[in-house]
Length: 327
Image 1 (cartoon, helix red, strand yellow):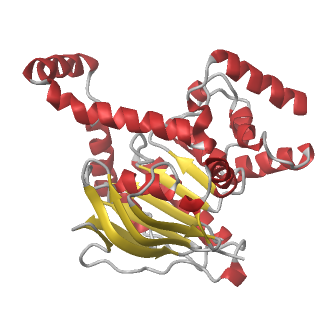
Image 2: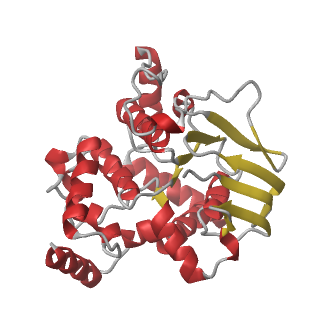
């Protein structure tokens, strides 16, 4: 039976108040886009929804229970069982093959080894990564690496997918493929997919676009619920005839997107000069970047599904031994 994810009277405040007394229902089978420029609180909301940062007040309700009323150990089990996380940096373990990376979230699972192997194979096939299963992350393209991160998020049977600026390093073609796969997963598996992004590209795939305005969670002016989600009775069936995405960008649109992505990859010499100038001008200018890095560290450390993004070489070796011992 599908469950919706509810915000009840939610107030979020960290360095400032982001949301105030907000109630909202995220429905199963829908792809939600949380849109807006950096700094409006998109990541903070994902942190609260993902049980990573505690709100000032309010509830996150799933399967009939307030998840913030649970103890830490129970929250960890909920994250492992029901949540999947996709980050800006895809965080595959660089010394492990793609197949081994996908097996890591299943180490705590009680599934028989044959079913674990079958699940890994099914995910790789669905994402078009069967031929890359024995490759290390450094040998994967950007799109393959990000699809591997999706696979790792989905492998444990997650019902809630939270993705924070997930296509920052992808070109338009791979970004379109990424969002189409997330949308198909939401619609076919009756999952809840919530993507935070400042880009316009995911608008073509979202069932509902939201933003944060005046401390409220609201649709941007002029948007609506597209309702591409399929009925629960059709879940798991091919949806090519039932779901239509505006996924064919014109050559001009694709060029604009790719040029924007390329503009973010400035020459290293220029970056060094700018960094030195900013440091000399004022250390305050570096504070947002420091805070962003700290948030990413906290996310990676707190999230069970991406906990392995920063592991010592010894622990990585032990994980690989465990995987091969089980198989």
